[in-house]
Amino acid sequence: MRIDPDNRTVQGLTEFLEFVGLNLVYLVTCLPVVTIGASTSALLEVTIRYSDDERGRPLPDYLPAFRRNLVPGLVAFAALLLPAGLLAFSAIFWLAQQTIPTTVAGFIAIAAGVYLLAAFGYATALIARYRNPLRQMLRNALLLPMAEPLRTAGLMLIPAAMVSLAIVFPPVWILILTVGFSVGAYGAAFLLRAVFSRHS
Picture 1 (tube, one colour):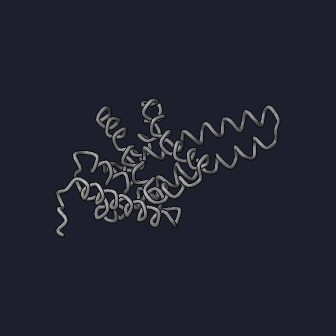
Picture 2 (cartoon, rainbow, N blue to C red):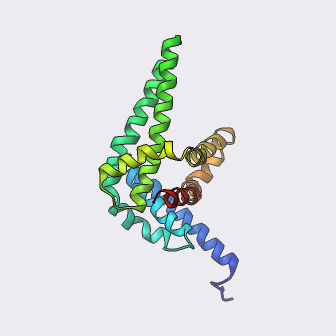
Picture 3 (cartoon, one colour):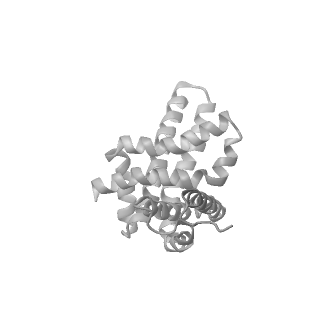
């Protein structure tokens, strides 16, 4: 029996398996932790391109994008994601004190951490889409959450929804670890393309 590669079912299965492979490669390249910025920008680069009339090959194009985005991704990690993580730890500390001033400080730390997390997401997308100087990339990443509050909320909702579902229904973690990051990035690509088209 010959399998027709043009069959819609075969094409759908092939695309699904490619996104599974993309998800696994993304997780492996995130393992050093400091490479999360480069990995995320590479994932967004291939999914943004694929969301535009299925251009490119997400899995084969991922590692070249990762190498290309390594240095700016490290900068984005150090400048935005690392401070966001430190703010999260400080929020836990302040909220544990259970006084009014420390509770206020804790909520301020949470708000600042969420803002930096959103800026990190934009930074990785800007790295994926443009070849701007690092200073300009960081400046634009810090401004975009204020310029695009609704789309930023939509982008933040994607990981928040995945984590919430996994907490309520733990088997969802299997889905997240096999295809969640790549499919989430593909969904985010449409929002990011709308942001870029408005501000380009």
